[in-house]
Amino acid sequence: ANIKKLAKKTSTEWVQVHGDSKKRATTRTSWTTEDVLVGPTLKPESDSELARRLQEKGDYNTDHYLKEGEESEVVEQYTSSHPELTEWYKEMPGFKNLVPNDQELIKAAMALTLSWKDENDYDKEEQPMTVYGGKQASYEITTEEEFELLADDYNIFMVDFHAPWCSHCRKFSPTWETFAYYFNDALHLMEEVYQNKVGDYKKAPPAIDLQSDEHKKANLPKGRMVVANVNCVAHRDICQKHKITGYPQIRIYKNLKASHTADRMTHVADLTQYTEYTGDRSIVNMAKFGLTLASEAYPKRMDFVSMLIAEEEEKPHPTAVMDDRKGPVVESTTADSVVTKSNEGCRVTGFADSARVPGVVRFSLVDEGGEKTFDPTLVNMSHSINQFWFGEKKLEPFMADYLLRYNQGGKGERSLKFVDDYHKDFVSTEQQLSYSHVVKVVQTWMEWARSGLRAHFYEMSVNTIQGKAPAESTAEVVFHYDISPLSVLIREEKESLFRFVVNLCAIVGGVFTVAGMCNSVIGSIAHKMQIGKFQ
Image 1 (cartoon, helix red, strand yellow):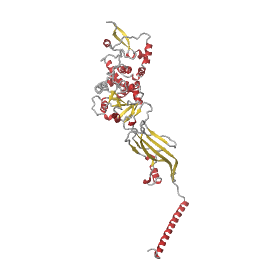
Image 2: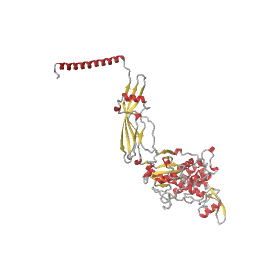
Image 3: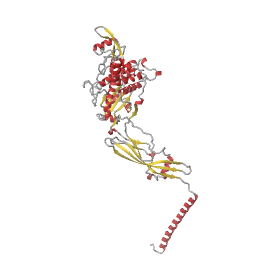
Image 4: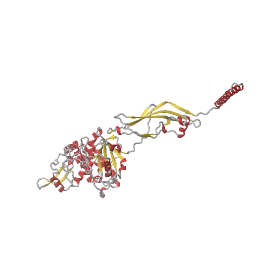
């Protein structure tokens, strides 16, 4: 029903039709035309003076009127030729709490954006192009200073790290640039239409130049959000500083302290905290994500879209602030589409069941969604092993002392380590350096006679091998473990009286025998000395 209503949506204006005569006419709006934007995207209550002015400029189309019975044809044509716009209108109920101007703005901006996406008749000098040969609307970051500039100027800074050799980047680039046009261009352009600064657009204008060094800084969009990109092949130092290992990688830096008058270097520390977009990579879902992200940055503002693209801070009108009792402004969340990260790396904690046979535990980079390619030369597998053991639980300290004392000899003789006692740091000093930890594991049982306590655990020896990964492979950390089929039993037993007596007799007999031997030797030497055989 909403699609049908929107497809039939018309604007009723007083327009000049024949000479000086006036007639109330119903015109088809821009988002129901074929492939190009023609006609008004203004609200129905727009004043007639504006309508006359637009018609005189040639920006106001009154050539076609909806005839009786034509509605079904319009709906069918609309839904088949504009599937993305149809899908976008389905998302509109989630923005029903926005002020009317913002509701109209986000709809018309998407129509303008999709028109730009489909338009191929642009002058190459007017429309910037990407390294992939498509239209570009995102800001081209070429230095770390520009990166920090955008972080200091904008509350929401979204950037795509990509590499031209990456097939996923090539496929994703048109979607990212369309997304960039929506926020960097279309919202601002349609806001000017609604503020009566310009007429409506028969054709989506080319994207502003955010690519050339001489123009891009001057052309930065006003407002509080910007969409950018970094070519990690051409500007490898930027990507290395931000620890980019896979492409494309979409990061969102939120800094509500940022402004266009911010002191440089004030908020650079915020760049270590970022959110990575992991949601669906379609223009509809990404645009919805961007608007929802803005609504979360400015909660309770029902005019957050106007605020997002406003040049200066504006105090909200009382009717533009949501009552706490009515819930959120936007009925969606970004939680399912992002992962909050920092540049400190990752901590892996967990356990796995394994049979008592040799096996492998492997840590490597894998893109389960199949939408990212990793650069092998940028994958750093430096790591620290804090605890790594086999068995249900770690060994108690007193048991560890007992085992070391009675089973593994003195401190200089201990070659084995307990699994939960293994801690070591490994730092990669070369590209594509992999680590292979070879672990030999033996199950050990301990039994105490007096308490009846019986416990088992695992001992291990570890040897680490470092080596370069193959040219096209990423580095990894692998634990090769081999659990011995044999077990060691350490059992404490109480000696019987009979065995004690036998042992005592053996000791006494041994002492007597040794004493007799010593006495015989001494007596023989003394006798020889008496008879003069020893001088």
